[in-house]
Length: 481
Image 1 (cartoon, one colour):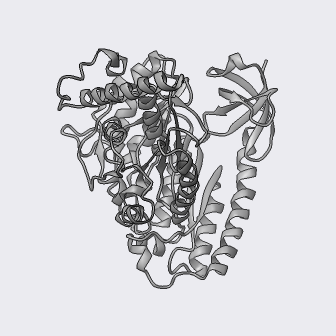
Image 2 (cartoon, rainbow, N blue to C red; image 1 turned 135 degrees about the vertical axis):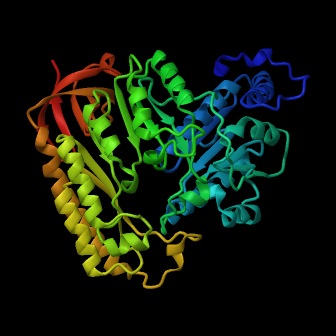
Image 3 (cartoon, rainbow, N blue to C red; image 1 turned 180 degrees about the horizontal axis):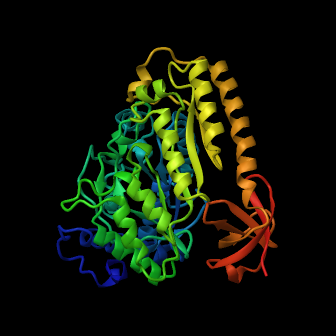
C-alpha cells in the first residue's frame, strides 16, 4: 500500500515521478525535510490546524488532507495559532463564504505576529472566479489557494508554498482524474466515508455544486471494493458511500455498473456490518436499488431523499426532473418494500416565485411522507446559478414566516415519527462518550437516530443491543445490559 511508504527512503536527488500517487509521496518526503528542520530549530514539530466547512464530501476530503499533514510530520491541533492553518471551504450558501472571509480577518491578525505562518484555502468556494479575484485583491496574506479537482496535489502545492513568499493559486476548471491511495486520518476508527464518485450532472437551478465540483466521475468498482476491504482490515465496521448523486454511480465507466450492483458487491465483504450512502437524487432512485435494500442485511434502514419543494411547478423551474406525485410514489414504494425505513430530506423555502399555494404543496408532502427529520433552508442566492437572476424573489418577511411554519410542522411530525420504536431493543453502533454527560455513551441506530445510554468506553466501535426506553423526539434514552 502506498500509504505505508517510508518517506525517509525516498531519494529527493531524483526528479519527482510523473505518475500519481507516487509523485505526491515524493513531495511529502520533500515537505518532511521542512518539519525535520523545524524540529531541530524549535525542539518541537510544526503544528497544523484544518477546519472543515460543508458536507460529508468535504469532511472526507479533510481526513485526506490531515492524513497527508500527519505523514509529513505536522502536529495536528484545533488552535488557529498554528504554523499552518487550512480552511476546507463550502460555497452552497453565501453565508458560508462570508464566514470564511470573517475568519481570514482573524487569521491576518495572528499572522502579523507570526510571519512564518502559512494560510491555505481549498474546497468548493475556491472554484469561484470572483472569490479568487477577491483573495488576490484584498487577502494577499493568504499563501495557498487550490480547489476541489486537485486536492490530491496538496503535498506538491504545500512544498511549493513552503519555498515561496508569494500567494500560490492552483485552480482547475475541470478534470477527469481520480487519484486515491493517499494517507487519510479517520475521525472514527470504526467507521469511514468512501468516495465512490465525484461531481454532479444535475444542474439544479439554485445549486452551485456542478460548477465547483465538476461533472460526474465514477471510481472503478474494484478500487472501491479494495479500499473498503482495507478499511475493514483496519477495524472499520460501517462505511458511508459518498457522492453528490450516488444513484447515478457507474454510468460513465468503461464497463457501466449500477449503484445497486455496487451495493451488492460491497455487501459481500466479510467483516463489514453496516453500509450507508448519500445523497440519493429522487429522479434516479431505481426499483432495482429498492429491491437490493429490501433484501440486504447490511444496508442501513435510512435514506436521505431531498425534496427541495412540494410544488411540481417549482420543481420544474428548479430543474429537479420529478413531480410531487412522482416523489410521493417513490416514498410509497420505499415504505411498501422497507416498512421500517427512516426518511430524511432537504427543503428550500423562498425559492424565487414561490407562492402561498406552492408552499402549501410543500407542507402537504411533509404531512404525507412524515419524515424522521428534515434539513430546512431559506433560499440563498448563489451568483452563477440560473436562480440568482430570476425575477419574483420572495420578500424576506414572507420567507421567514413560511420557514417558521415549516420548521414547526417538521418538528411536530418528526417527534411523533421518531418515537415509533420506543420500547424496542435494537442494534446500536456505539460512537462516542456523550458530549453533555460523560456517564453516557452515544450510539446510532440503523435508521440514523441517536440513542444515549449508560455504558463504558470499551463499548465504542461495537454494535450492541440497546433497549429504547424513552423517545425524546429526535433521540432516545436507552439501557444496555
